[in-house]
Image 1: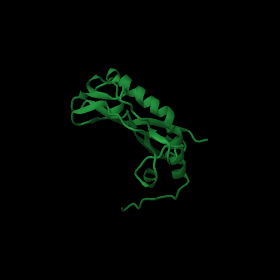
Image 2: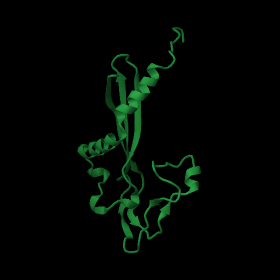
Image 3: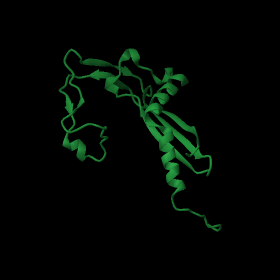
Image 4: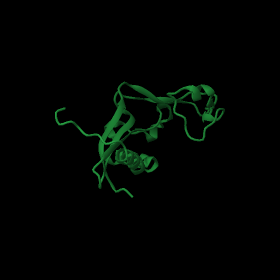
Length: 160
């Protein structure tokens, strides 16, 4: 079993640059997963979802909300994180990068909203830890390093 030492090498908080109305939920029918989603190479396909499944539930008139305004640069869209791991035996390293989404603007509830100005390191690290538990950083780094350890050897020319 490979021993890997890894560290968090980047952590950036990304914000929406303009004023934004969030928490606004208009009345709508349920949004279903369609063949168009399947055919779109840029569309994220969650595990276990099939054509005809509900992606987003209907919003009734009673559930609709008008939302609230967030000043420019205060709505956090995601946290940009990177981990670098090094195989203790070979010194081969690899990185694991991710953008941790923090929710969609329309799903934000004013009582739970945290503006960038009010963010603490503890809040950010809690969000990263929540993502980290689901993403399996060690497994991703192990796979990448194993591929590099078993790949073709690259030797640099001394004159290059």
